[in-house]
Structures are given as structure tokens and as C-alpha cells.
Length: 275
Image (cartoon, rainbow, N blue to C red):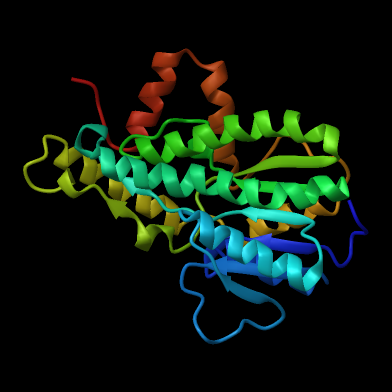
């Protein structure tokens, strides 16, 4: 990696939430930051640049990466943060809705990695930071496709670490618990999750808990501080968890408790019960 100060950083999904918090903190620290958004708007943020990028389109990803490389000559760090949450019972989610969720949250990360890795390999240096979730360790009710996208991201990153290490490139995962962002307001509900769904009542019960926990979550700046710390530290670990202690402890409980006991604990949290 290059010197700590002045790294060129590309952050996807930087118009709000975790991505914006990372952009603001890293630019204030002296790094050269390019954020991306599907609709960047006309007003430039202070201290960093916002580019147009749709992570579901190869040409859009490559165009934004090419802009940064043309201006700066390198990309030292990528924070893959772009994504959204799809909610609904798995039976109610259409194949098309599932494709869109995975295309954004998983394949979008792959597109960005494929676009930046050639230049990183040429320089034998680079860091890929993937924003995962504690929902990528614990399957959450009525967030099955979101959890699936993050579980897959975990596996992708573990594999990627092994493949790029010989080229001097590092990859890591940051796993936030509940964070106060617009993810809550922007959540997409499966079209069939309303009236007529056999799951409507338990879905609405669980969703109230999900949204309340998110609104009471940690600020996105806490995730940004973790990204900054791992960027400016030594070799990175596979993953870093961020958030409330109780939520982080729940991940450990998954491996310690009997599976049925752990499932009952999760169901109780979301107001669900077995028949």
C-alpha cells in the first residue's frame, strides 16, 4: 500500500448513509475520495467528488473507474457499499425481484472488483473493503434475499482474499449491525407481500421490529471509523463487526447455542412463534 495519507479511495453508494459517512471522514483525513451514486446531482459535496455509477451496469462501472484512473493515475482503496434491502417472505418474492437484489448487492461488487483489479495488480497494491452485514452471518426472517446476498458476499470475499494476495492486494469485510441510514426508508417490499399473502401478519409484525431496531442503531459514522482504522492499520483481518454489543454477541451465540435454541431466540426477537 502507499503512504497512509493521500490514498485514492473509491466508495460506491456514497450519496447517503454509510457511504457518505465514509467519504466525509476519509476526505477530512486527507485522502482523495471519489464517491458514486446512480443520481449524483449537480451540487458537489465539499472535499470530495461524486460520480455517476450504477453497479448493475458494466459500462457505468467501467466509466466511473476510468474517470478516477484518468484523473489520479491509481485507485488505492475501494469501499463497496452500494446496496439495498428487499423484504418479504421468500415464497412471496418473485424470481425477478431476487435477481435484482443479488445483481445489486453481490454482482455489483463483482463488477467493481473486475474494473479496479487490473490497475491494482499492475501496481502490486490495493485494498478492497466490502460492506457486509451481521445479516450475512445470521439468516433473518423476511429478509432472506438480503441475507443471501450478504452471505454470498462473505464467501466471495474470502475467496477473493486468497486469489489477490499474491499480487499484494488485500480484501476485507465490514459487518455492521443495525445502522441509522436511509436503508430503512428505501427498503423494497416484495410486490406479493401485502393483502392476500399467507405471511402478511407475521411479516408486518417482524417488519415493525426490524425498522425500530434500525432507527435505534448506531450512526453510520461508527462504520466509517472502522473503515478508516483498518485502512490506516497493518494487514487486514477477514472481517470486522460494528454495532451494538448485543447484536455482535448474537453472532457468537449462533455457534455456541443449540441450533433450535438459537432459532427460537431469533424468532422471539421478531415476534414470531412456532405452530
